[in-house]
Length: 623
Image (cartoon, rainbow, N blue to C red):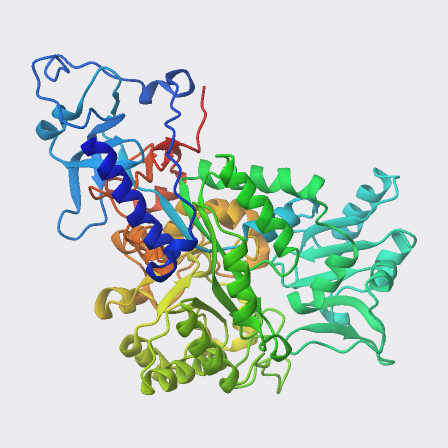
């Protein structure tokens, strides 16, 4: 038997075990051979092969027994994220695997006639990026609509919607995203009467810039069956007037989902091409793995489309999806549903293996669950979506079934619930894999518990900045104790990953996805200039000042780890990606500058020149 074929078969089986879970490898389809697609005409001059007089690929050089490399990277900064070998001088790739990582002299043995030699010219190569908490499926839906400027004031928003309606005399839905939740505060939020005055016969639904609220006209409410008799879900709900009639303001996904479904915004002929293009956008930004933290509707249709996309070789990222639980009524049967989704929808790069628990809402609309009341309005604390018994039960069920749990926690009350549930399950011998998402407000005693219990954490870099609306809601004391991750990561070994949470994040369009914008914000705890410009005055006074405590800022090394290996660990992919090591998949990103040699203030300017996933170019075409 050919030795290289045998090695390839064993690597494929090993990867299959990692991706599907060693106890479930029989379910995984046989991994398909990765095809290298790298035409030199599609690469910028920097990436063209460079002949060197002092290093030649001549016939006298001994060649590895199983063949030369397809790619060789050298002459720049190469960060591996491996503690025993944090930097190397060269990396060689054959097929979809890294076959060499070491000094330049040793790399020359891997050069053959067809090897694409990439002279880094002092630039930087690092592992492919991992977005550990993002919503590409939901973001695709949001991006398909009319975009409202997040900085627009009340009159400007109304004028923009009028202009949009006037330009579209058809018969369909008016759908958009972008209005700021701080608007119309004096009347308790935007009202349907303003939209009805613009268009009463066609349904209108406009999501807020943070995607946690929506604004509907009377027609949209009627189509969704939302009336005075409609009950609010445990988290979120429908703003009502003195007579109990819905005003058109809708808070949080459990209340928004029936409206999105009723308006049929996920028609495959409209949605699927947009999803494919959106995933390509992530690849162009350097991402090779994404954790989709929840799509509240249309799962089976979307999952089937993703499997089909992957089997056609058109999925440019590894994508893990979730099954969501947002209220007590969804607890029963949730893990069984997840198991069925896991069985039915899986391919080489796509899987569904995580239960997402949404424990509370967000601070901006006072739906985050707090131990002590908000400053405004007096007495409000938000509320928990589930009981602790619910959470314990789901943790135990998921561990038994071999699934992960992803727990949304913004307020300190929801975090305490998660830690109490984890402690109880561990006390009875359980060891569930739990990721805490966001972890925005933490009581001091629970900060110590995080250091001791060491759950996985994921949060967002550009959230680690000043935002006056949040300070007004929480008060100065709690506000100055938000997003405390740096010391957990550095001093206590907690696995802290970073993800964009797009589209439920700051900025409009795809600005919030940008990894190097997030990395800079995580290090400086200040908004980088593009974010400051995009958010304008909405961030409030002193927005350019660092968010305390500065001791909890990430280092550059910590932030890069959070966007690579830490995210891979969260997704259960650390054996095949997240770092540069021989035998791992060739998930790599080439940057136009060396992040270790530039001022931190310039990190947001970084551009991606090349993205490889499984050794094939997936992200950049600069021809």
